[in-house]
Length: 156
Ligand SMILES: CC(C)(COP(=O)(O)OP(=O)(O)OC[C@H]1O[C@@H](n2cnc3c(N)ncnc32)[C@H](O)[C@@H]1OP(=O)(O)O)[C@@H](O)C(=O)NCCC(=O)NCCS
Image 1 (tube, rainbow, N blue to C red):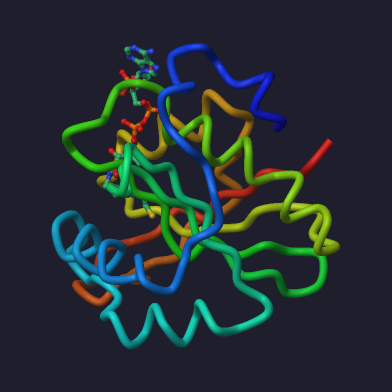
Image 2 (cartoon, rainbow, N blue to C red; image 1 turned 180 degrees about the vertical axis):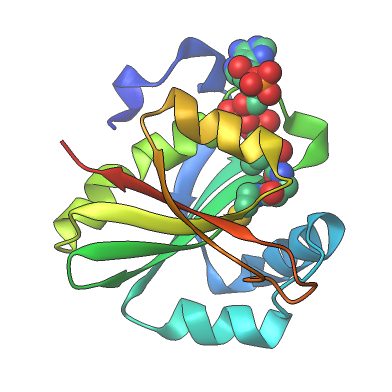
């Protein structure tokens, strides 16, 4: 999505690909919001893979939202998307997930695929508003035994 088409309220922010020096901020946000966060080292490994794209929204030097995914053939598999708790309910998650579609398509992907905890109502609601669908369920997918909804967005 070109910057000229961004909703006006986001013009104060920058959207860019993750830089290596900012990986620490991603690791910090993961620790803050996830039960099973990826470590700094795990994120570095993903970051270095040519399959991976991390798109971030920044308010000055601060990463306030991010979305990471890996492309495997026709599928772009979601690593994570997070909005900093101080910046939620502005539509940033929906915006970022949508803005990332052309990047995934440019790598040959035809759909996003992800797993969402059964209890993660906020994420399920965001996804529903932007055309993602629950296509299946996977019992005990997560480390703590929680079931996952398998979610998908087929690109138009
Ligand atoms: C799930 C998550 C990414 C949503 O982030 P977000 O940026 O707040 O999401 P959005 O703003 O797009 O949508 C959230 C709500 O804000 C509302 N909203 C969107 N734009 C808005 C605006 N301009 N003004 C007010 N509210 C708005 C949406 O309608 C939605 O409302 P709802 O929860 O009542 O349905 C965030 O809660 C998060 O980081 N959770 C922890 C990590 C996680 O679980 N990630 C997903 C699994 S990888």
